[in-house]
Image 1 (tube, rainbow, N blue to C red):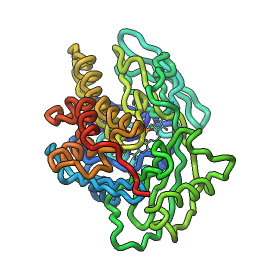
Image 2 (image 1 turned 180 degrees about the vertical axis):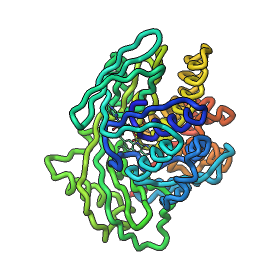
Image 3 (image 1 turned 90 degrees about the vertical axis):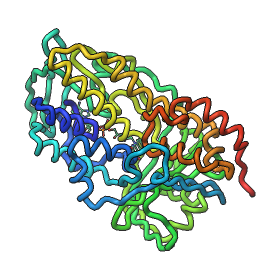
Length: 405
Ligand code: FAD
């Protein structure tokens, strides 16, 4: 296993459950910062299946039960507990440094061998096995043989780079600027159990997140194409504070916030690949494809890819010939394509028109809530099965949303 993020830990735990020997090589030392802090309820199901849920439940993370959208004076709340698909309706908002450490420690307790500070630099494949070339941060090098390699290296994208599998994303290049703050939010009506997704009043292609954590802290970030963000040489902290004040709700909520952490960028994060698997490898999570942060789908897709792949690794290692194309690629694509519809619809404003409309009836709201809660593989939901057609029809009914100003 390359990488000990959520996809690597979930895959390691699931393979240990099936009795396989698992070695996880992670180039960093944990705890380490990672972006991707707002989870979706569906991933609670996968954590439970992997035997990781109890440790997460006991960690004291901020509960999350929905999303609060805001655009000027328009506010819409989606409650994940009132949804079409059966399954958990709540999840957590997590500092990933701690969350990722908990997951990998649990996988280790289940018997996975984990090496931190070990970077995978190269791979060779034969018909029988893969040989990984590894270097350590103690300046040692070694090779390791594995019968199967799962690449869970996230933005490291080890196998896509080495095997020339990289393909440009269908989305334009966007960037995010983000930090953690002590929020000092005193508004008694503020609901810490919802992520805030804020559309910029001047430019609907720019949005911000506010993810409340436990203990009075929040993650805050802004996303947009660089030309739209127009930083104009401003210091990143000043830029992020300025743009936060341009969002009426965030300006009011965060008037006493303490900005005590450096602001960091991430750009060009959307990625894709030409192939998700080979005879001795498969790509998980962000190592394969990453869409966009707007609906917090990254960790859930990463965990779902781990769940699908490990079932097939088990069969492959038992000498069977599972149908990777059907049961991994196509199966994973169902959810990815669903999210892709709503992400595209967010940026071209069809989905924003729906979200900010007052026309959405309760049944449709429940179906949308299911998708946004991560149940994007539930093909009994018409907003999954025929996502593009359904979104177009709904956007037409809702009409173009306008601000009152
Ligand atoms: P990662 O979590 O990236 O883990 C990969 C690991 O592999 C790392 O620990 C890395 O050190 C290790 N590694 C890399 N290269 C090597 C190597 N050569 N050898 C050994 N180890 C290696 N997702 C959400 O679910 N919710 C959100 O709110 C959210 N917000 C986001 C905001 C932004 C701005 C962005 C860009 C993304 C966001 N995401 C979010 C997506 C989320 O960050 C990822 O989808 C998720 O972390 C993917 O998990 P992973 O296990 O695939 O990879």
